[in-house]
Amino acid sequence: MNYVSVEGLTKSYGINPLFKGINFNINEGDSIALIARNGVGKTTLLRILAGKEVPDAGTAKIHKDVHLVLFEQEPQFIESGSITQNLFNQDHPVMKAISKYEMAMESEDENLITDAIMEMEENSAWDFESKVKTILTQLNINHLEQPVSKLSGGQRKRVSLAKTLIQIGFEPKHVLLLMDEPTNHLDLNMIEWLENYLSQEKVTLLLVSHDRYFLEAVTDQIWELERENLYSYKGDYENYLEKKAARIDSELASIDKAKNTFRKELEWMRKQPKARTTKSKSRQDNFYEVEARAKQKIEETNLQLDMKMTRLGGKIIEAKKVYKSYGDLVVLNGFDYTFSKGERIGVVGKNGVGKSTFLQILQGITQPDSGKINVGETIVFGHFSQEGLVYKKDMRVIEFLKTFAENFPLASGGSLSAAQFLELFLFTPDKQYTYLSALSGGEKKRLQLLTILFKNPNFLILDEPTNDLDLPTLAVLEQFLIDFAGCVLLVSHDRYFMDKLVDHLFIFEGNGVIRDYPGNYTQFRILEKTKQNYAALSSDISKAKDFSVPTKEETTTVQAPAAVKKSSEKMSFKEKTELENLNKLIPEMEVKKKGLTEKLNDSSLAYDKIIELSETLGALNTQLEEAELRWLVLNEKNY
Image 1 (cartoon, rainbow, N blue to C red):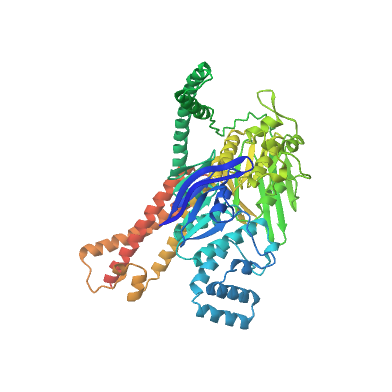
Image 2 (cartoon, one colour):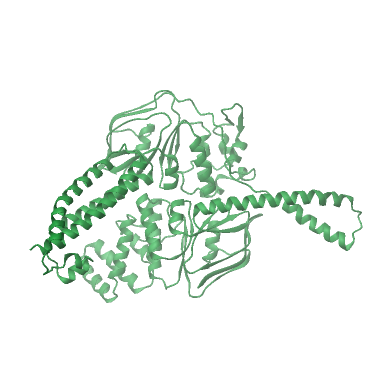
């Protein structure tokens, strides 16, 4: 079923066109990622499809049976209303029943709760209420009586996301979900949960996101807005990069051919008399088309900044027995660490465990309750904070940068002017004279980043630097940080970004516990999931050892009736021998499993060794489970 048909869509702001004459279709089941540089029109295109903006030309036809749900970067709320009132603000019996039930549970009024439960029963709302509870729990949304006007930016974003996910469950069968940067302000566990949720719901999706792992998990094609056109690529992000590179090579070859033709045609034009024949006029008109093609520019983002970093001394930072608490919240509990030259450390943990406070303590912005932070004399911090771009008065971009310095020194000698430095970070000459207040969220983030680098730091502390940055800018930032010779301390929910840059992780586990893990985020998650699977299997095995003969219904539940069904048959000699061997083999396998688990807990293991041990343990667990089931069958025959 065709959901959306777009023909000749054009949109401009002032003299700058965002896209011109683009065409596309969205069909049922499509999962599409929309990517582009900031300011090129990703959000505008979503809003046009949702009917919130009008194109300059062209049409966007939505099938009459399709309902669009738009998740925006800047959520709109009833500011005076509570979280509950905003989440369930729809004229639907089930929604009303759930809203009434949630409010009654918050009030703890028995009469209200009784009435709410009856209404839930009448509307058969319990199944969906369970789904709603899962969404709210996974997104850490509590205290539903709070007014949304009191929420932080991150909390507002999560409430808006919950509202969107709840809404698509109530809509008709055909839903097109439009999402603009849904992973911003979510921690890593929330992002992984959202990936699984969207995959299970199997919604038709058009998504704007800079999170490349998220894109790969939930989409199967990529659209890119570039130079007023829309380019479509089937497959994952890696395939997109390959196909885009091939397209650019083809376009460059075409432009080179047009340039050769243009030179020949230009020579012909100069030789022509002023009087035009019909034939020469046609050739002259074609000349201008060739000229436009020849003068086309393919702009690629390639930042190579030969930065003259402030020299690092022998001493970096030493943290000795550092403690910090806010009431019952323990941030640091005797933290000890000595930083080394060139370290690249990722910081991960749930929201609210104190990661930002930790960064401030290292810089001396916040004082610890006890302990010492000794910072080397040569250390120059560059701190990218979540607070965003800070300025006292509105001014033009280039004027703002010049308040930090007029020039940027290069390691090879010489320097870059403020204007040249801005161009490296994709601020065109026209954009440099834009007022700060007129910049987009992504442009402000980019300017905030380059003002930090303009100070030549040697210890970068980056607190969620990827939020609101487009993929081309992220590629620029990644390459810069790969080449950066100083220390990097990185807090990010962008797993791809983290995997590419860090050597090891500080895992904030809560209650002031910080674990140093030698590897990147993906390696850490593999190990954690292996441990979780082992714990679950151990629990199942423990239950199996307390085995009693199940009923027919119970055997159906465990999906192994043949393995545990009581048999009246007597054991053969071969089976007796097999049982004796199993009595020896199973304890040996358990000892081997314990040894493998202890090895996996060794934090000094290399990544390839972790993978090898994890695969061995997985195979052993399968063998052990089969052996124990076989033991149960034979043991039943023995009695």
